[in-house]
Image 1 (spheres, rainbow, N blue to C red):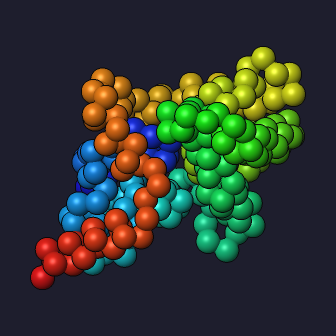
Image 2 (cartoon, helix red, strand yellow):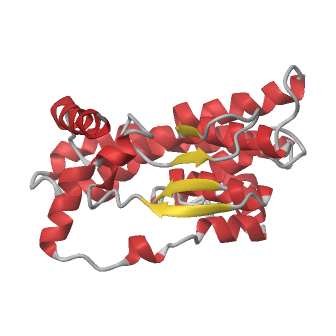
Length: 255
């Protein structure tokens, strides 16, 4: 059994989709990132970066004590090896063709889309001067547009991101790519027709739908103005002081 520490966001969906695709038994533990669960001592003992998702595998590969992992890329790669699915064996060229796209997503698509979404859709609620947002929107939405071109070119040559076989490269990238219409509109932009074909095809998989919709109601609940203010304070502009205080509390609780 695997404990999945989760909230319904693109990074959380990566792991829930992978667990569903692999048919691995898991139980879901909510990490309400708008309520501050990511700073609780019990979570920081699992994830020192105070970000979900994270897992605890109570029957880890190779045996031994339960294994705690954080970072979605590391988790999905581990689950692929555990299940023997969606990633070729160590040492094979095919494995590295897949992993290069996994790392591409971690370093490019996820961060760039996160920043673009922040400046375009969230930051307007954090400042009274729209001019402050212009450069950030142009910089990050422009980079997302470039990354769409990278994906579209690859998907014009192959059915999936890392070739003609569905892999963790697709599982890692789809949860972000399915939200591209918040930033640009590939559904009406003929430049990205291959990307749209892939988004629709992967999104039609039953396991992807189930993982994508896992507890979606958690993120859809209405918030009061005060709750929304608290949420923004927790999600944005964190400093090392906040993290340090949480880490010290976690260390104290572990004694």
